Length: 109
Image (cartoon, rainbow, N blue to C red):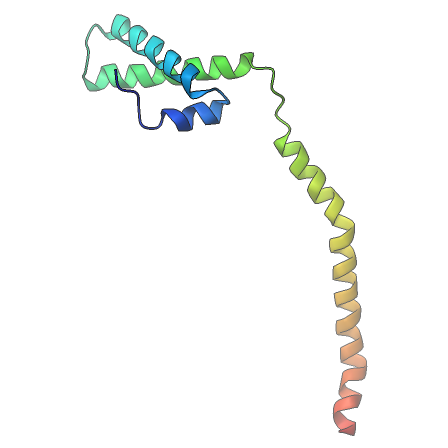
């Protein structure tokens, strides 16, 4: 049985191996067949995809892998804040200095 072309993307998004996603796809197809009673029409494929997404979401909630990516990004931004603030402060000082003293140098030349 063919699997959807986007199955690896769905698996990666859910944090599941491709082999496990293929197993869940086969289960989703069985459930869609039992639900619709037809094979191959649009209603059947829609039901199969709905079941697959639901099964992947259930699988995702059972995994023990912590989701720390957003936390790490937030920490990275917080570590950079003092540097960004210092850079802005020096830029403001430089612009102020140029306004006050830059005109004097141009007149002397």
